[in-house]
Amino acid sequence: MPDESIMTSFQSLINNVTRFNIGKKTFLIPEMNKIGVHLLASVFKSYGINAQVIETCKGLDMGQEYTSGKECFPCQITTGDILYFMKKEKALKGTDFHPENYVYFMPEAEGPCRFGMYNKFQRMILDSIPDLKQVKIASITSEDSYSLHGIIDQASVKDLRKTGYFSVVVADILDRLIWRVRPYEVEPGITDAFMERSMLAMKKTFVAYGYSNNYNKILEKLVEIVQEGSSLIDSRILPKPLIGIVGEIYLRSHLQANQNLVKVLENYGAEVVNASIAEWVNYASYNVFLDAKNNLRLNLKQLKFKGLKDYLKKVIVFGCEFYYQEYKQRQAYKQVNKYLDLAEDHSVARLNDILKREDLFSFDIGTEACLSIPGIMECAASGYNGVVNVYPFTCMPSTITSAIIKSRIHKLKMPFLDTPYDTTSQPGREAAIRTFMFQASRHLKKYGRQNKSFH
Image (cartoon, rainbow, N blue to C red; front, side):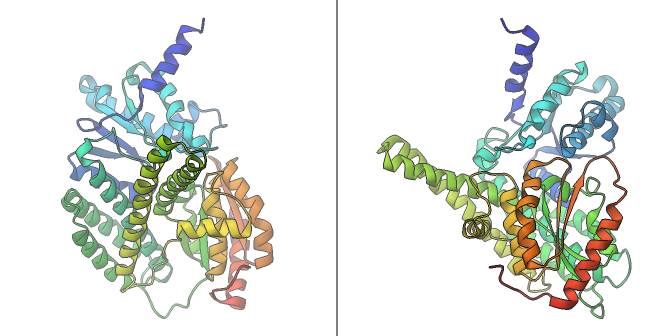
């Protein structure tokens, strides 16, 4: 007979890591991308959900205490974040602290990536602490394109998902506004101060107009912010080397985790464009759409008519979802680019075409390597002067990216830098970045920012 404690642990993973309805709970969202997570929380608030962004990296020592170091870095950070929040909340509320009133949000992804196991691992940690056993973990998955079914009222699922996605696009644009303006700002520090005010204004806008799906009002505020941001640029400053960032989504988005890499690159003379969060969401939708199409073909060949009907429905649903997302994204960028030239997002379908044409990798394998490898190729073709690959130490998808792309990058003569991160400060990091930026500066002088073919 299996040990009773083992059976109890497995039962907890089934019962306490799932799609909990968060309507009357305090919904705890860990910080990844600062602007993005705050705007997403504002969308939930507009629907009457008590969403709260939890502080990050304050409890890293607690995260390290409960991990062995074999987990990837984001797992250590997010584990510490939830433990720190709960410890602080318990101290603040005393006898009024009721762990059953909290739901911690930790999504997952399918495929060969440790991210899919974070919430299970964190469930076991919470279960080992008597006061926190009743804290639930709400999870959604890339398997169904991060559907919100089961965590909110059914009537709100479709609208909240649309507005939530739009908040991700808006956050990407605000980030790209920072990166576009800050290297050329008329006064040091003015961009960061401006963006703090702008983020607060945009949070209020999503709370006010998110529930009604009033995208026009949201876009009006976004355009207003972009217009103001464009006025902070000193036009006398010459163009700087354009650097793209790809890699693992958490590390490249989380300022503390990547030791504020964007600012470090800017300090050495770069203008930076980081891969977007919306790109990953689009990829998840596109992948489910492709999977449904493949299964539809298979069922058609095997004359399985019941399966044919099910997969035809999925093709329609996920296909419409994917094309709607890209439409809303293009619409937003089109509006803001009337006032300032911000880098637009890669088309996920085009990235898939690049992988197929160049025979580099496959969407069938999954992971962020599907985006990073062709994303680097797109940067090379779009006149970038260098690319940085950011990832947790020992991350398999990003190690694959590096192994596959280096020979291509060498032929393209474009500077490339791997930057793995863990809890340590690497002594050679600054020297590597300085060397990379010297190469990028030489690349800019020789080639400029000319679009070119990578064939």
